[in-house]
Structures are given as C-alpha cells and as structure tokens.
Image (cartoon, rainbow, N blue to C red; front, side):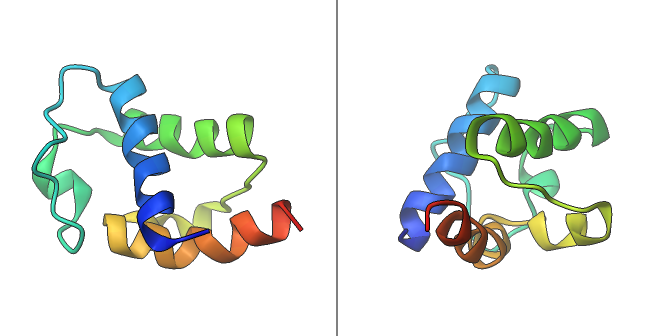
Length: 85
C-alpha cells in the first residue's frame, strides 16, 4: 500500500463520519484536529471504522500516532500490509 492510498482511506473515513467537513485542503503534516472540527468521539469513530472496514486494531496507547495524515500513513501502512499478507 502506498502512503497516498493510506491517506485516502483515512480521508474517506473522515468524510463518512464528518460529512460537513471540507477535506479538499487538508495538509498531511498538520494535526487533523487543528485543521478539522473533529472531537474525541469523531476520532474514536475513525479508529472503529479502521477496525470494522479494514480489520486494523489501534490500541489506545497508539492513538497519538494518528494525529496527522502523515503520521496515520506511517503507522497504518505496516498494519494494512500485515492484514493483507
């Protein structure tokens, strides 16, 4: 999986849980919560959707690694590869 594909998966999940958000100008390196109106419940929804749709478990201790699109991709790519292996 490419970094861009992983970022798109995260953006697609955000689009589902926060349909009013404009995702056209999200910066990869800036914290998602600094750019979007996401609260802690939205964040939990992202984690739940990763588990439900893609079989990826994100332990609570790892939540800080999902704060930007870049950090999401860096964290999730090995997990996607392990699930799809």
